[in-house]
Length: 112
Length: 112
DNA sequence: CGACCATACCTTGAACTAAAAGGTATTTCA
DNA sequence: TGAAATACCTTTTAGTTCAAGGTATGGTCG
Image 1 (cartoon, rainbow over the protein chains, first blue to last red):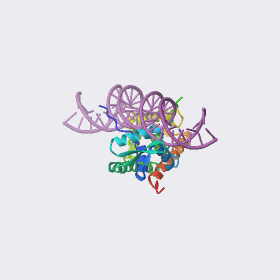
Image 2 (image 1 turned 30 degrees about the vertical axis):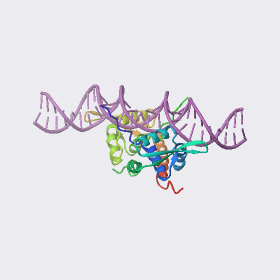
Image 3 (image 1 turned 180 degrees about the vertical axis):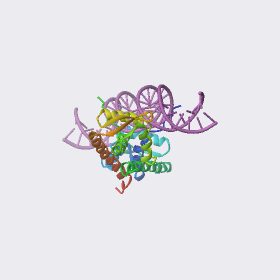
Image 4 (image 1 turned 120 degrees about the vertical axis):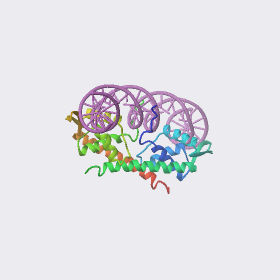
């Protein structure tokens, strides 16, 4: 019946986002720049990635949002819930696993 | 006109494959198991991924292939060309960059 | 011998993700 | 006033991976 697992290394945008929000609440537009900056320009995710992820995380109860009006503009600030912190730890673990696997393959790899 | 860059962390299957072939020539079916093993089961790529990558790398001149008949069965062994080794180094660098970026974001990240 | 599983190649189709671009609205600054 | 930046959001397109199917030979076990 062809139900597909997610690609083996997705979840990184979600991971970065949760990591940053775990430290301080932020709004979407801000996260776009923050991610770029926090990764030393290695990763740059557009709004077309960020907003959908924020919305889906909120739907799942991993994030909570509150609107703030700042100088006439509306910002939607997101912060982690308990569920969000759990999710962060889970993704962190998954990432460490695949990152480690790749490192092993690239490094010693051989001598087999 | 909407020409899209590849997703920010693709190229990993290609990287693993080149890395293994750099050490010894192998055939597709063998690579499927090798990748799983070399990454400590962290990454498991199916034949549907491996074969197309092999073919496209060969088309680009990064791999060279030779058929061998082993006990009545035909195997297609692949090995790296100069171009393939260059490509390997390039991908290695790219990977190190994004991997590093993520590590930075996950680690210190904050205290900002 | 017949059935079945492993080996070995390959392709197709569906699912999922990310990239790019477009759309609305307000503020700031030249 | 007019352009650029802020801030939200969605839609379209493209690209990758996953799952499964399709062919064929060889070995194993009842």
